[in-house]
Length: 283
Image (cartoon, rainbow, N blue to C red):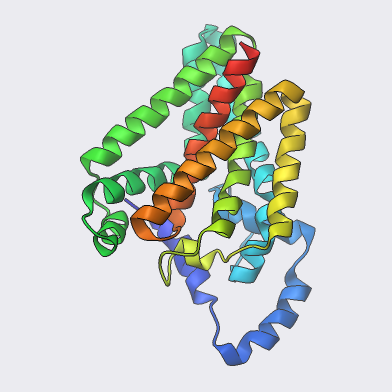
């Protein structure tokens, strides 16, 4: 169930792997190529389908460095997704329609890569009898029963959470918070779990150091604090930590590490648990 665009991102990153003899040259090039702006554009190209100038350098070291700005990508994407949602809200005043348009726009902007990941994990973990078979199923383009059920449940819960937030006038705020904090969760899983494959998105994205991971989480937490206040921030962080723990434990027990699909599942689960924490405090 991997889209062509998703596969293309994996191909781009795999094609930038270099032999050991070229690593010193690559280190010099990395220091030249890496900058705050290039980090953001690289992260935007990796995590979205927003039209951008070509970003051809997806070496693992550069992707791993860019994880600090993944929450900012979430903020931009959520802001764009809210535009059509606010328009239909103005026209209809219906919170459910608002939530549907916001989530649909976000799925389009992200290329459904996170939904693809959580669906693949559901099929692989649920249908495979051993590690190799699970990984094989996760790469299969066939949509299984577990995937369909998982997508229905996760999309449905997102709709419920955004609609519940609308009842207290916080739908847009929660949508932004979920997008930001969930994209700070993925680098943590990348850091604490080894790649389960020798190729693919999980391997090609590299294993970031703790510094960019913690900077990204600090940025996300600060945005949540500004948007929702200190109570919401603590509730959201607790929810995200629970999601990370669950996904990491399940992924380690099922396939011994992380893949791009596991990272997608992390983003979806972190969104949901963050939303539950937010509603629990704010309602």
